[in-house]
Image (tube, rainbow, N blue to C red; front, side, top):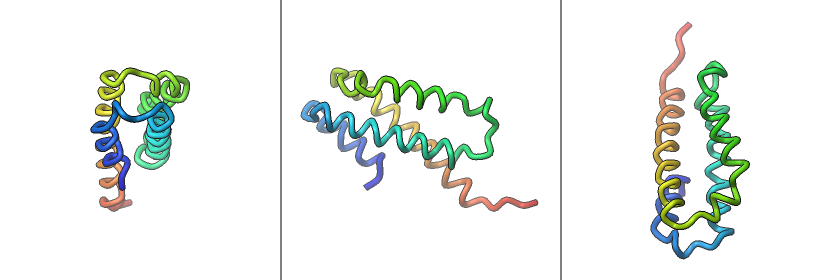
Length: 102
């Protein structure tokens, strides 16, 4: 299963997820964002990727708060993470598919 699928599945049962399950999902999202930072955004100037550094730092410092959010708030955040991951997946795929000519 992909992370995007897991996010969609979690959204469907979000009211039933315990704090530990929510935390685990957010940690997986964080790990994926960190991976994209080094792969999909490789070669991008630091001043052009500060947004992902800021996002990663914010999520890291707020893990417990995010996991403890009420269902509606967390649902909104998960939907936005799913969209972001889809965009970064597209960037990653296009970087692999397009050869670099020198």
